[in-house]
Length: 79
Image 1: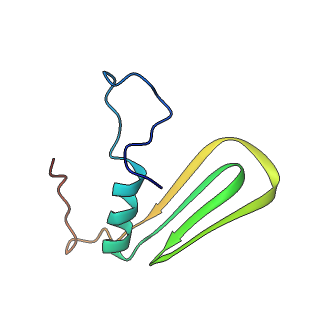
Image 2: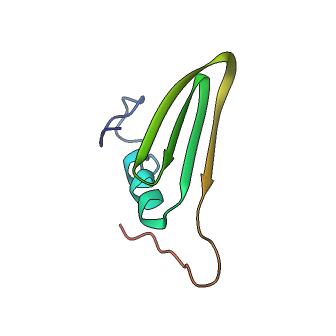
């Protein structure tokens, strides 16, 4: 995952935070992230990043985030 990569070419359209930022948040939070797309799964857990191909082609993309979200973990997005 590289910062500033996008599948869109129009810079006037706002984007999200970006996968590298989300990955950093997952690492700091000791959480997990999985992205399922086409026939692949990207998993991030701690400092482990794994990529695997599966024998199923799923149209679309599913992103699963597991983070600490109890009352002692409150987050702000600072830009």
